[in-house]
Amino acid sequence: MSNSQFKTVTIAGGTGTLGYAISEAFLNDGSYNVKILRRKPENENEKAKLLASKGAEIVYADYNQKDELVKALKGTDVLVSAVSVTGFYDIQSPLLAAAKEASVKRFIPSEFALVYKPGVHPVVDYKIKFREELEKSGLEYTYIQTGLFQEYLYWIGYDIVNKKATFFGDGNTKLYTTSLPDIGKYTVESLKIPETRN
Image 1 (cartoon, rainbow, N blue to C red):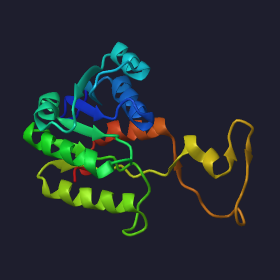
Image 2 (cartoon, one colour):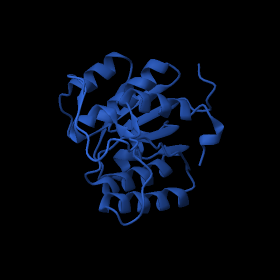
Image 3 (cartoon, rainbow, N blue to C red):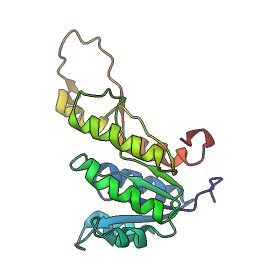
Image 4 (cartoon, rainbow, N blue to C red):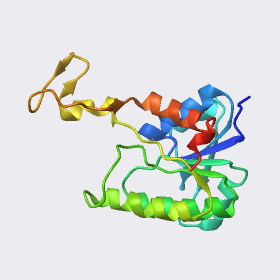
């Protein structure tokens, strides 16, 4: 068992691209009860089936119904949000309110990105606004900062399959990257390191 004070982890967005990697990392670690929070309506999802076959409990809630979210989060020690940036603030705010009411101890928001500055993009501003709410909530929190997702480097000219790259500029600019499985592992390990609290 883990040396962590936490036993049950619920992952919102746990069947998405990043969320699946985080879910697998928690299941592979074996130290936690893992719940995958999915939005209603219930529907078939191969990733959910696979995670359930590995021991995850799949729970559904209407994110617009606080009582359903609170019920789904009961018994959760840590809520990891891996929701997409579409509706980022509007999705995470109800999760935070329900987490507080359900006595969740720590919230790890969907921050998995580079360090950012206000005003560069609306999503960044929503992240900053949500951070302010989270830090005032009384819940513990941890932010996971990453590099660009390695799996998406093809968007900026990297063809990993054919081992080719298109460089823009002189090719000397450093590019910080992180793989999705490593993000999952870092998220798991963050619960075992006291310094990651707040």
